[in-house]
Length: 335
Image 1 (cartoon, rainbow, N blue to C red):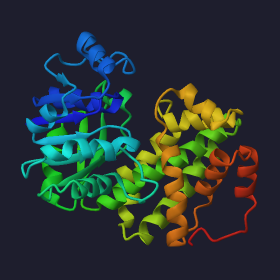
Image 2: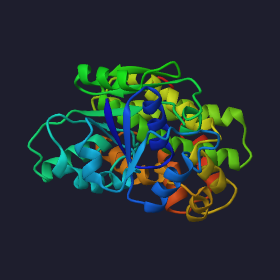
Image 3: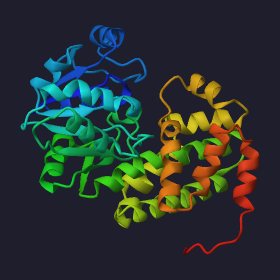
């Protein structure tokens, strides 16, 4: 299959490596010439040590070339750039394309998931086709995927046959792909778990232990599930790979940017200082405002996400945030 990956970051290149090893033709587009030059010259990504990349992968700064010659178009740019990238590719979209989004986030103004942002931008650009939109999400840190370490991921689309096509595209002995028709739930999981991971990092940075992390993962999942059910998503999605699976790995892994950023905040840095030290996009930060808006709109209680918002956006003390979480009114776990 002919595939294009829009974005030359770690996740995009890890996926390019999988697709190439699966025998597919792969073209990587990036708006950053220096990024492409490094990839061409070294056949590896500077943030994926030990992962050699096939020299059969093509690289281009010409987005029309990337889109026009490939059936599967994979959006692997950061969530903040999904809309502008969709606008760039819209003139070249045909009824032969299948769009796959691997970015995780929520748009602040519209509260759209990433595939909804793409669909909205295509509509604004008057794309004359209803192009299938697939979300690919799960416990898949690029650093491990690029090394062929086994994991599983979810291909989500309202059209189950389309999700199966995408599952077949990526499946191999190191990547097991499940399908799910609850694309809204899968994308919501991907956005909200990053915020919970910021909280997990904060408590680690404050010197708290595994008990506290386990509490945040468990109660964070409860918040994610409550929001999902209020928005019409399926409960089982949140107990699956895109939900609890991705939540666990993002809250505990040394590869998690959100976890690391939270740790620096817990150690006393501001968000600005922490994110600069991380050196890569912290998606949980970009999802925070939208998550708090959703909480108010659907009248869903999300105290952990509220606590992260106060700490990151209002410079509240992380220790005070944990104290407030621990001393709230007693509630039933079944609520």
